[in-house]
Length: 237
Image (cartoon, rainbow, N blue to C red; front, side, top):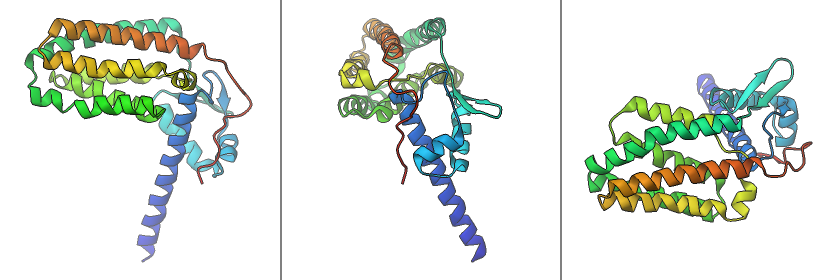
C-alpha cells in the first residue's frame, strides 16, 4: 500500500504542476505577466496560493517552450520578441504555409479536410466565448494538422517551433474588442476554399490570414501595461 500511496501523491503533484502551468499561460496571454519582467517562484506561489515547488516546475516547462528564461538567483524572465523577430517569423511561415496549403488542397481528400472543420469551428467558438487559451490551442492544432496532410513531419516541426517563438502575449484587450473573431473565422473560409479545390484562393486566404495574425501581434504589443506590481493570478485552489 505504501507504493500506491506514493504513486497517488506523485499524480497529485503532477496535476498541481499542470494547474499552475495553465494559470501561468493564462496570465501570459492576458498580459498580466509582462515580457522582459522577472518573476520569482515564491512571489508567484504566494499569489497562486500554492508552494513554490510546483511553480518552479511549471516555469521550467514554460522555459522548455521558450516562453520564459531562468535568471540566476532571481527567478524567471518572460521572454521578449522584437518586431524584427516577428517580421522574420511571419516571413518564414508565409514561405512555408502558403505553398503547402496549395499542395494539400490538390492532394488531400474531402474526408481529410472535413475532419478539420470541428477544429476550425472550435477556434471561432473560443474567440466568441473569450476563451483565449482554447482559442490559441485550437488554432495550433488546426494549422499543424493541416500542414501534416502534406506528409512532411519536419515541416510541421519547423512551423510548430516558429509558433512557439512568436507566442502572443497581452491578448485580453484585443479579445474584449472582438478583434480575434475575424481572424478565427478565416480558418473556416480557408477550409471552404480548400474543399472547393481552389488552390490559388486558399493560398491567398492563408497569406492574408498570416498578415492578419502579424497585425494582431503588433496591436497586442501596444496594449497598456496595466498593473506591473501584480500578476492578478489569484489562487488555483
